[in-house]
Amino acid sequence: MYIVNNHDQKGFTLLEVMISIAILAIGMLGIAGLNMVSIEHNNAAYLRSQAVTITQDIVERMRNNPDAVDNGNFDEVKSDEITNAPTVTCLTSVSGCNSAQLADIDIGQWVQTIKTINNDNDRRQLPGASATITAVASTDNLFTIKIEWAVKKLTEVSGSTGTYSRAASKANYEFQVVIH
Image 1 (cartoon, one colour):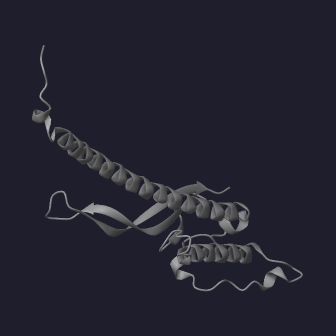
Image 2 (image 1 turned 45 degrees about the vertical axis):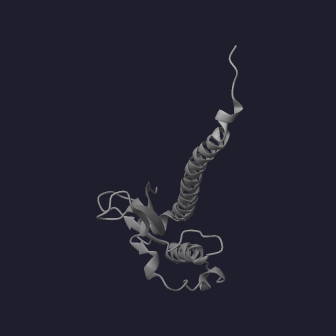
Image 3 (image 1 turned 180 degrees about the vertical axis):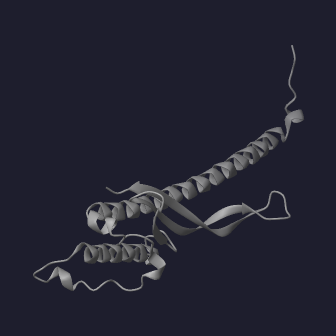
């Protein structure tokens, strides 16, 4: 029969506990990193969905005003170049608005939406947003709508392997649509 001497085992359990805590800490750091990446990707998806909503808004406005589309009222629109909302006197007049005036109103309201979202820091929607509508010259009524916004991306620092920092960058959503 073998008799175990308890005096030979002193401190061994403490060493096992310390190793277990070290392994657990490394695992928890990995989970924390994964959680940060998940939050960042979730935020990027949210911002992209905001851009899709803004794009869909102007597409519906264009579809509701085909005469203005045909006349080129939606060609070459840049949100950064529009500073004031259009005057809307035609809405209260007896004769109403013509298609060009409605296009001006639609573009003005759309740009105000972009600027409002851009400045809404409480909800952090599309920071630094800008938008363009470009008519593709080679075909009739084909438009490219592009929304850009500011993001910070994790990029590798030049000259050092494995070192990363968050740098300012631009994200965008681009959509092409034919308006009939």
